[in-house]
Length: 89
Image (cartoon, rainbow, N blue to C red; front, side, top):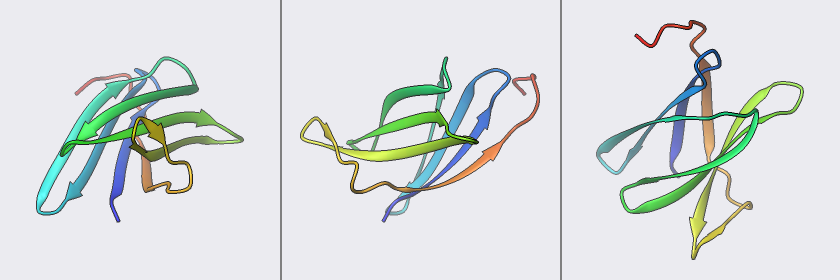
C-alpha cells in the first residue's frame, strides 16, 4: 500500500507530496486556492486525486483514480505536516 507524506504551507497555499513506489521516491509540489479543493497528480504512471478540505481541522485525503473514476473506498494513508512560514525557502 502506498503511503504519502504531505507538507502543507497554509500561508502560501503550497503542498509538497512525497511517496515511495517500489524503490523510487517521488515528490510533487502543487498549489491550492481553497480549503475545499480537489486536484490530480501522477506518480509512476498512476493518477491520484487529492482533496484539501477543512472539517473542524485542515485535512488532506488522497485516493486512487482507476478508469477515470476516483475510488473513494481505497483512501491512502497520509502523514500531514505543516510548514508555518510565509517564506518559500
